[in-house]
Each structure stands twice: as C-alpha cells, then as structure tokens.
Image (cartoon, one colour):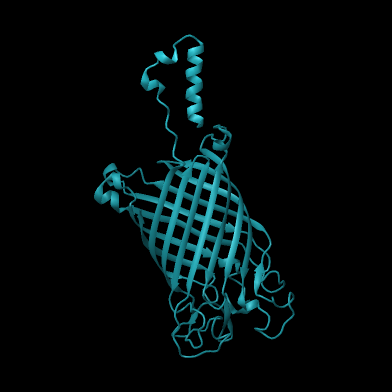
Length: 369
C-alpha cells in the first residue's frame, strides 16, 4: 500500500472509531482510493544541434598564414541528447554529445598534414596532406537525493534555500586523435538548491573529484625505451589524485518582459576543478596541473514553439546563443611551455598555441520529444 493510501485509510478509521461516521455512511467519493503517483514525476528528453566556431583541443593548432602566430581554433559541430527526470526522492540528469572537429584537430592516423600541432609534426613529421577532423564523444551523468524528500520534512528549506541533496555522478570521454583519451571521472558530494525570481533556480554543488584517463604520449617506447613508472607508462593509462570540484548551474525566465513577449530565458553553468597532480600522473615532475574552469556563463534562449504555437508548446523548440569559456582545458596549464602543448617556440620566441583556453560564442537549436 502506498504512503498516500495509508494516510487515507488511517483517517477513515479514526473517524469511525470516534463515532463521527461509519464507513458505510461515508459518501462513495470520499471512500474512493487515492491513485498512486507515477514513479517519474517529470521526464524531459531533448536533442540539440549546435555550431561552435572557435572550439579548441589542447595541442591541436596550426601556423597562421602570415606566420605571425598559432591558430588554435577548431570549429566543431555538436550533436547532443539530454535526459532529465524527477522522481519521489530526487533527480537524474544525463547527456551525451558528439563533437566533430574541423581539420585543425586531426583524427588519427594523420601521416601528412599542414598543421604544426604536437599531434602531427612533433610525432609523425610534417607533410602536405589535409587530414580528417577528429570525433569526440562526451557523456555526463548526475543524480541527487533530496534531504527534504528523504526525511519527509521542510527543515532544509529556509529563505532562498530550497533544498539540500546528496549528489554523485560520472563523466566519460573518448576521441580518435593520437592522444586517444579515455577519460573516466567520478564525483560525489552535496548540492545546495536556491530559488531565483520568476520561478528560477541556482544549484551549487561542492564535490570530490577523481579522474582516470589515457595519454598515448606517455606510453613507453614512443620516445625511446624509457623507465616504466618513472619516465613513461607501460600502457599509457594515467591516474590522478582525488581533488575538489564545485559545479554551479542556473535557470531563470525573463519574467520582467511584457507578458505578450515572454519567450526568453537565461541559463548557465560553471565547473571549477582543483589541481589533480601532474598532468601525466602517476608520472611526476613533468607538467603540474592547474585549476580548471569549464563554464558557459550565459545562454540566452528563445522559446520558438511558444512564440509560434502558444504556451501549450513551451520549450518544444528552443533557439539559443551562448558564450563558452574553458580555461586550463583538461587541467593543462595554459602558461606552460612544456611539450609544446599550450605554448611552443615560434621564431625563437615561446608563443601561445591558443589551444588550452576555449573562448567562443556558439549557437544551436534544441527540440523536446
């Protein structure tokens, strides 16, 4: 029997025992059992296509035509599927994206190329080819259990604080370039949910973060025999120390706009991930990692389906534009000149490759189904 049914049955028994009414005397409607709530209170599935003109991939860059610097920009087409659900005790969020890069981020193998990136000239040797762009898959999962729901209370709601939750999740990423990453990270901690005006929210989650990955450049034999565990890794698998993370996301309708034009909303996210040891860990003394900032500070969304078909179809089709900022991408120090990844020599001067910081305005369309 459900919790709600138990409450109704208990109430009826109390009335009868008090002599207020007998069960047979109660109206039929009053005795009608309460329906169970569905397991999922909200299910939201969406697909998105977006175009990112100035993405980056650390170590993927080319020489500008005038030789005045390095071009680290990699245009990317992004195809995404996103799932979100709410159930009795919490939420689940899952997204998986495919990033298809242009020629500035070559797929492996690439035996002849016009680029000068570490993925080509430094390893294979230059050439005059024009290699296919790499394909990357990135998946992310986050789940919460709300304290108010778990303990059947409103004690964890006060002022703008809406709830406190346990949160955990994982990421997975792989790409078919020479690096051959196989990122697996795991997070666990708390989430603090706050209310914003116009039925908006902002969630702040302090978390513990653990990452395991793969780096083909660390594999023994690539730069000579090496010493396993000291100067190289037998299989190229990296393992980083546990560090801290803070993830933030928010959403708010622009409710101050006149009612007939309320088709716009803003949202955003930011992730801060602490240093995780050497960027080649468990190897040490090569390139210390730095705090990583992976963010989309603002996204402006136009609810096209609501504007065209009415409120009943709100957010069935969204068109949006956003700004993306990713500093020290994957924890790599954007100021480091080690290995020619984030900085490399050009005409005798150490010059930024512009590939370890991503700054781009990008746009897309999202459809709910």
